[in-house]
Amino acid sequence: MENWNTTSDFILLGLLNHTGAHQFLFVLVLITAFISFVGNALMFLLILLDSGLHRPMYFLLSQLSLMDMILVITIVPKMAADYLTGRMFISPVGCGFQIFFFLTLEGGECFLLAAMSYDRYVAICHPLRYPVLMSWQLCLRMTLGSWFLGAADGLMQAAATLNFSFCRTHEIDHFFCEAPSLVRLACADTSVFEYAMYVCCVLMLLVPISLILISYSLILAAVLQMRSNEARKKAFTTCSSHISVVGLFFGAAIFTYMRPKSYRLANHDKVVSACYTIFTPVLNPLIYTKHLNSSCSKLVAIECITNCLCLL
Image (tube, rainbow, N blue to C red; front, side, top):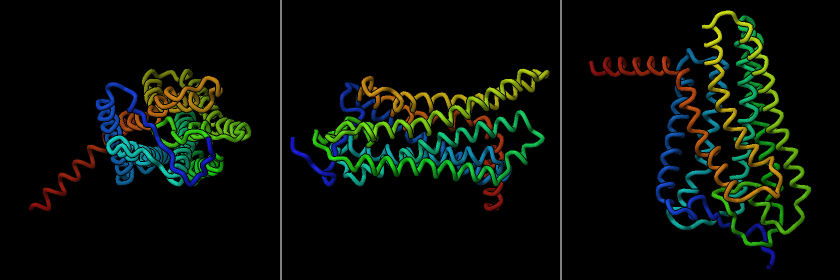
């Protein structure tokens, strides 16, 4: 087949076209994405508006919500438009932007979740030294570092991926441009790039999850030494939500990016990608809601009182 260059459009085959219940699944995806966006937006605004939540723990949580909101906007509208119009084309520039934003947000979340685990470690194991060990300065540095490292990974992989010549069909068997799916279409030798991508995955996945495991090992050791059952229960409650998010997020990401090439199937990749781009973000507001219920009630009460006074 003749080579075609990166000025040619790609065709996204989508997530839903090969299933019998595609209409039901499409509605389910849209509802899930809407709940995810609204839930994360409300959580972000709540943390921003309530001065009682202006602490490092909640600031990190607000950044997680912001990343999930941008992720949903990056993936779902294009996928929905493709399904409704049947025009499944995406330009190389659009494809590059999807790869960049996707890897920026996913990579940023990896390091942000590691920062959140350190925050929980300090809060439980060194509560009296929390203002020193988890200062605002350190919190901001960890947040900016998460965004920067994610963006650096996204920029490098997007530029390298689109630099290949593509001689196979320009159909991407996916519902958005993800680097591994696009590399399959390249007619050049991609072994060096795949090795570099594997190294990036080690840095972006295994390093953060190692830090998370170390933090929670220390937390577990501290909790087991607590004499008060109430203190143990509070510590487990504080950490359980974060552990749930970590397990879902890293499990799906490692399955997608750390598997040997010979074990990869396009359908499996699409299903797993849907989990951590569409369904996992909706869990964050649900999982963390219990930490924010009192603040939400307080803000609603204040809003009601303000409206009543305005009517008077």
